[in-house]
Image (cartoon, rainbow, N blue to C red; front, side, top):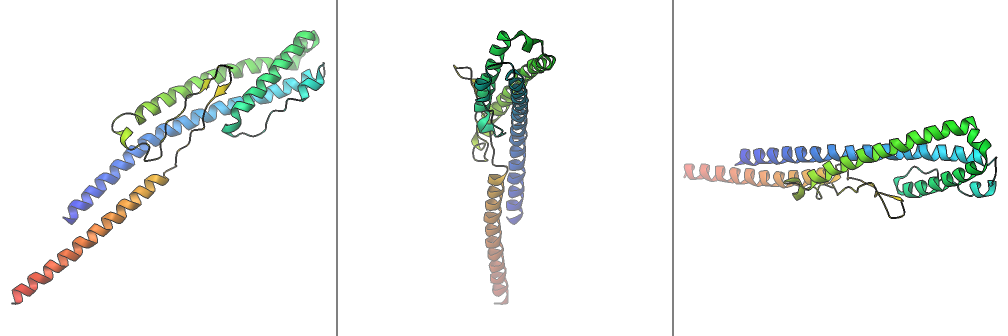
Length: 216
C-alpha cells in the first residue's frame, strides 16, 4: 500500500512538471516576442525625438516641444508612448513639407531611413508575437491543458491589435512564475506525508496485535 502511494505521487508530480514546463516554455516565448516589440517601439520613440529636435530649429518650435515622450519602459505605457510618437512624427512631417531645407538635411534623411526600417521591424515582430500567442492559446485551450492551465497560473494571452483609431492595443501578459505549482506540490506532499504516517501507524498496530495474539 505504501509503495503504491509513493508510485502514484511520483507519477502525478512528474506529470505536473511536464504539463507546467510545456506551458511555461510557450508562455516565455510569448513574453520574449512581446519584449522584442517594445524594444523596437522604444527605438522608434528615440528616433522620433531626434527628428523633433532637428525640426524644431526650422519652425513651429513651440508646437513640437509640447510633445514629450515618456521615458518609462513599462508595457502599460506602450499605447501612450506609441500615440505620442505618432503625433511627433506627424508634426515633423508637416514642418518638413514646409521647409525643403529640412528634407535636405543629411541627419534628417538618415533618421528617416532608420525610421522606415524600424517600422518594418515592428510589423515583423508583431506578426511573430501574434503567432506565438496563437500557439500558446491553442495549446492552453486543448485537452488536457484546459483542465489545469488557469489553475497553474497560465491565463490567456492577448493579441497585438489596433483599435478603430489606429492605436496599438495589447494587455500585459504575465504568469505566476511557478508559485501555484510549488504550492500545489507542497499540498500534495503534505497530504501524502499524512497518509504515509497513518499507514505506518496502522501497520505498527497490526504488527503489535499479531505479536500479542501469537503470545496468547
